[in-house]
Image 1 (cartoon, rainbow, N blue to C red):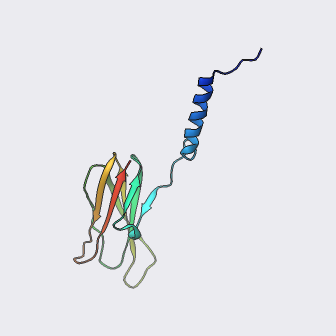
Image 2 (cartoon, helix red, strand yellow):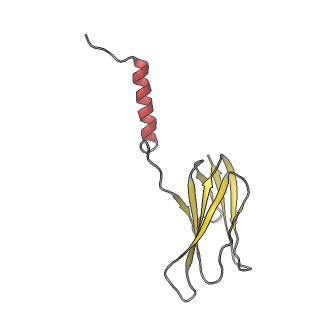
Image 3 (tube, rainbow, N blue to C red):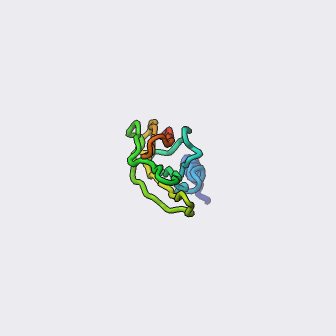
Length: 128
C-alpha cells in the first residue's frame, strides 16, 4: 500500500519553494545598491534592513560635507570614506557615504558641499 502525502503539506511545501525562488534563491543576498551623481534629485526604493551607498566624485576643493542631513529615522547614516581615483590636474576623489534603511517610511538625504556655491546632492529614499 502506498502512502500519500496529505494535500495541505504538499501545498505548503510548494508555496514555500515558490516564495524562496521569488527572492532570487533562498539565503541569497542582493548586490549592495550604490547611487551616484546621476541619481541626484531622484526617488529610489530600498528594503528595510538593507545597506546602500552614495558614491560622489569630487574635483579640487569641492568636498561633500559629512554627516549628511537626513529628514527621518527611516534611513541612518553609517560612515563616509574617501578613495583616490585617476589623478587629474584638479585632483579626483570619490567620497562614499554608507547608509542603512532602518524602517519603513521615506527619508530625504541632502549632502552639501564644503565649498560655497558648489552644487550638493539630494536623494529621496522610500524604505519598504
